[in-house]
Amino acid sequence: MKHQFLIIATLALALTVHNTDVHAQNKQTEVQSVYSYNGKTTINTTEDGQKFEIEMEGKKIIQLHVDGKKIREEDFSKYEATIKKIEERIEKERAKAEKARAEAAIHREEAAKHRAEAEVHRKEASAAREAAEKDRNRAAVQRQEAETQRRQAEQHRTHAERQREEAQAQRAVADRHRAEAEVHRNEAEKHRAEAEVHRAAAAEERRKFDTMIDELVTDKLIPSRKELRSVIFDNNELLINDVKQPDAVYKKYKEKYLKNTTGRITFRNDDGSRTISLD
Image (cartoon, rainbow, N blue to C red; front, side, top):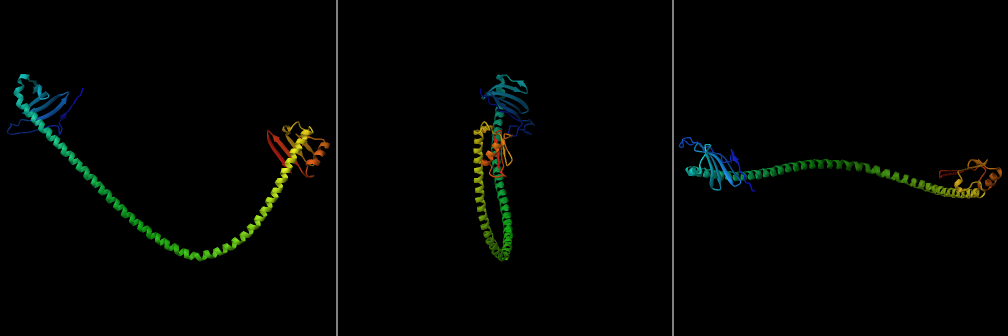
């Protein structure tokens, strides 16, 4: 169901009018409210000092109360002129209200336009002031930079001669450093060659120790390579897994694997972590 509901009560645009007319013997005219609902319109108003409540369906009056008294339908015609006057007044006031609303809307649009233009002008003026301030600041900075550059140029000229002298001294130092570097390179090459000899000797000693372990297995001094936990082998004794070996075994392995009378071999195998020291 479509419902259209309009309430206009005691508003400037709501058809409220007070007229005092000396020639009408100070009778009061007032529209209190007009509303429409479900196709019906109800008007509450005061006309010529009387209070009217008019209920209409379209242009037809279906109920009428005057000063709170319900008027019979056959007596509606007695109030026809007054009701027509009320309708005309309401229509005039509605037209006036519509016109006022339209004018107000135009004024609001114009005011908004003026505010927008004023804001644009304000922003333009502000931007112009900021630009001018930036120009002044930039000019001051440029003057300061120019002065700084002038002083720096003077310092550069003053230092140029000293730098040339220092450069000459640095060239002499560089020549000396190059000669020293050549000596260092030659020494480094010699050290690398010696280190290579030492690495090769160490690799040979480790290979000999691996051969020695294989021989320990062959001679049944240990069940297998995995069973070898420790070796201490020096000029005094041979200990395998913390067990000192007989002299005959010691002498045999010393002749083959101990490189000199002051040499020493130390080996540890702890939970898979192998450590060997060859002195």
